[in-house]
Image (cartoon, rainbow, N blue to C red; front, side, top):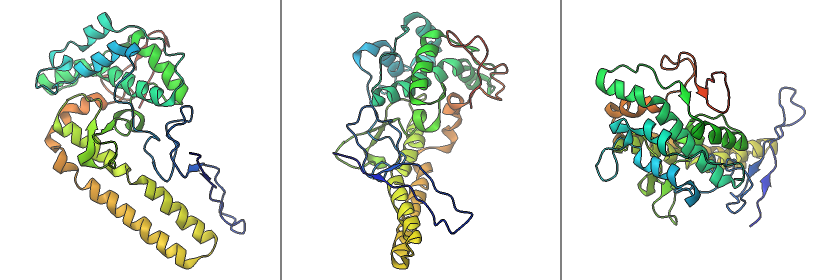
Length: 303
């Protein structure tokens, strides 16, 4: 199926304050295009990835997949994971190979690797802070060096997709971190599961996936925004009114989804996983930034 690229909105040249924009907007998501970036803005996917995220890494990354599955504080079977036992750091050092990802060009796999390496990086760096916070309600210091078996492949993958080698909201924590329970059904909260987590709690599940359910409306947000702008350029008042009405209804739907946040996530639990989504810039747990072993001898600061 071929994709139609919607022409960029170009306001009338008679308005001196108006400028044209060259940003490409796709009419369909082109799910089978392996080399097209996962992040594209379109009428179908909005700001979500073109394809549902990978839920499991290929077998060549078995140990990375295994560590991520064993990582959460609470495992699906109720047992304590590596973070709960304070064993993640040692497991990374002893067991994780230095994977060569230089040959990976499939955008869906690159996105999954970025999500997974950033999850592991944040868990590794902030594990001591989580332990101290649970014991003393103080964060203390994080690990100041990210080992090369995380740092090197993370930097390689980040460069390939044009990202920074640290966890971010869209490409890591939330919008590329969902699984549809039934792939034939829409992206709505009851049809979603998490792929990766830190706490393994229902509150973390709800906190992340309500965001996904909100952004699932962004395809219509893009569609009706473009329709509003284009009808204004063409001075079609009736078409403009319809588009603006639909745009308003889409925004209301997003807000209604947002209002369900505390139904699905207990606000008292937020600090139980907040530690792991902190950055390394202007944070007391990383006063001198983080050394990325095998990448930079100078400390790096992100978010």
